[in-house]
Image 1 (cartoon, rainbow, N blue to C red):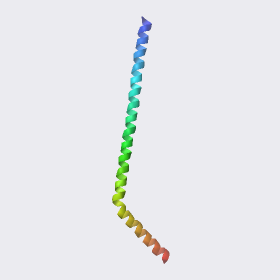
Image 2: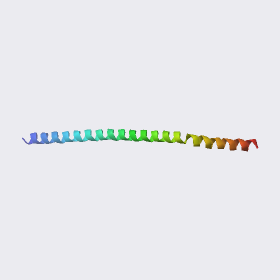
Image 3: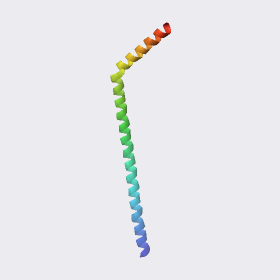
Length: 74
């Protein structure tokens, strides 16, 4: 009788540990998906910012090019 109780208790503990491990693994997958979404959002924001600033950036590089060409030509 005592052996059966111990086996039953061990079985319950083992099942509880399996459920706990399964839950932790599921949450790790969710966290990974959330990080992926955050990275995608940051990439979209960076592309949008560069698209909006493209004219200004091109102007700055044009000014630098003009100044360098003037300095080299002198």
